[in-house]
Length: 161
Image (cartoon, rainbow, N blue to C red; front, top):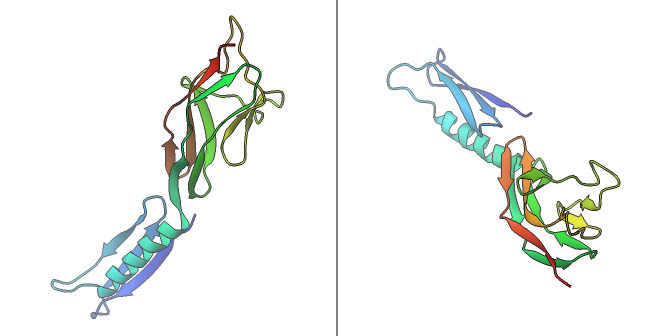
């Protein structure tokens, strides 16, 4: 984690200002010791630099491509798209009807594959009379240490033949 610290001096050498930028909060913390009427002009410049530097380096996730509703035939492949941006690069998880989706990362035998882009690829849509494990409402969630972003809902329905 990156912290930026500056010690700033006023026209009176007895007065100092310690300023530390904190990346999670995106702003600085200051402890001024000023006589009446004094100010730290340098503080305003440093504080703006701190905010600008943190914005360039780290940012919370945001979804830039949301999944769309799909109607797919049983046994066919399908892809629910999701793409997120942020720094550090967000991790993506998928949820179906509120439950976390198990992918090949959890079980190598899974028919669901989490692609490097964040999209969810189905090798084949599984659908039976009693079991419909792929049909439902999906969302993708992107996370990094600054927060999370949730996509819009997308429904996956199996077409009747």
